[in-house]
Length: 207
Image (cartoon, rainbow, N blue to C red; front, side, top):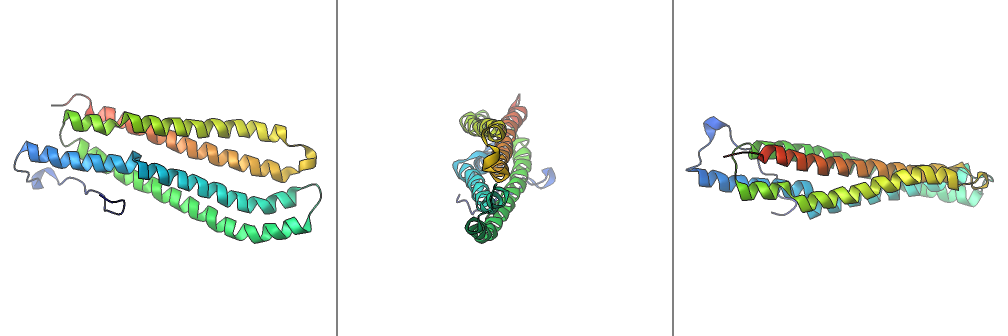
């Protein structure tokens, strides 16, 4: 399916299920779980996750030009004028990035709810093993942990590394970068760990 394809619908209620046999039900379940798992952890989802992070950083960077000029030890009219011109598109980029991030989190919640419904429908060893997606979960985990670690380091390094002559604008700029790294990385960590634990819980035991 292409990324624009609608999500697999939830399975029909028990009284409306009309599969001719268990093999047909297993086949439909496998298709739905594979697609839903791809929507949660697949390569396209990972690219969108990183794109949202880069847009947040870009928007904050554009807004921070004005912040740095205002927080400097000596006001620079040219820098302040440049900051005014970059602040407006910065707000637009940052706001768009926040909207895309919230939209993606809401969509992930819908995907996860449907994944739970399809997984509870039956059990099938090969399909359940793919649902755990250990390689993708580890990829999300390592990338997100690196973001959290770097953000945490910056949170301490920036205030200590900026002198009074540099101005408080640079401190605010660096702390903003650290916060974006930390929050984005934490979101990815929760997603990776949550999916793997959910998959183990849903597929443990079975028929």
